[in-house]
Image 1 (tube, rainbow, N blue to C red):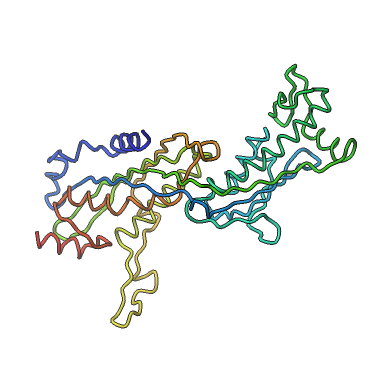
Image 2 (image 1 turned 180 degrees about the horizontal axis):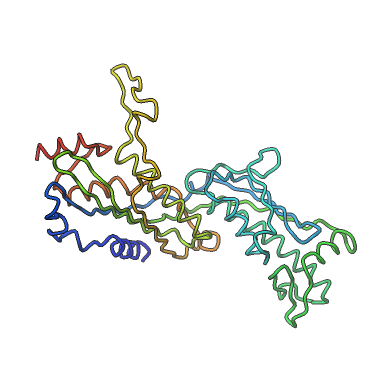
Length: 345
């Protein structure tokens, strides 16, 4: 169901019906231009089963906030935020009450590494488990303060622990009682996770191109990707990863290429002759997150990080076939390669 919805949303956004409209593909006012729309379908993995492991520890502070130690490394993907959100959801507090300390190998729990699209799925589950340990003890201490015989009936929300009858105590009160007054203890929990599963995310990538048949120049005007990533814990950071991955893949497919001499030395080892896309050269990019429930992931999440790079090159190739009818099997799609393919028919 996820991939079907990805295809449907992407096709609507790109205007798939125009593929067969000759007046659009061959604009009368620009006789040297041919337009095309292409599509590709991709799947990826989520972590490496029985190998990737993440750890997390969470400690209650005097003021009712929490220190969270995770081995996972935030590479700019927003991992610290997402892992903090998972813990905050379990503990019934705002994200600001979770102080995340990550990737210090002397202090934080072990983590296999930020790779294989694994951080939210693996380290997020570790964070979930650690938070559940803390939540259980918070409920037990709250039940003691409220005179409740059934701790599991306690609800944590808005920085407080609520009894079924509406009475409540703050997490700060629980912290002060447990640390300084009665049956003193440090409330904290540790969790780790290794998954036997590798649930695949799915993606549908659509690209619109213009080809100048006189020069072979390809212009990518619009890229769309719809991704089934399970439940997006943070849709903003997830969408950012998808957009960034697509633009990285665009360079790989369209312009970035190592030029080597006969002895294998790189001839374009600088950003002058090695062309990458500038910010003002980026095409229009639309991202859609098709959210499905992945039962093995934290709050239904699975991978999103790497799949955006999988579909751009084949989608551009598909668009070139639609635009000018040539099939090019070597990347990148430079003007020289496209013009040569056009000459060869």
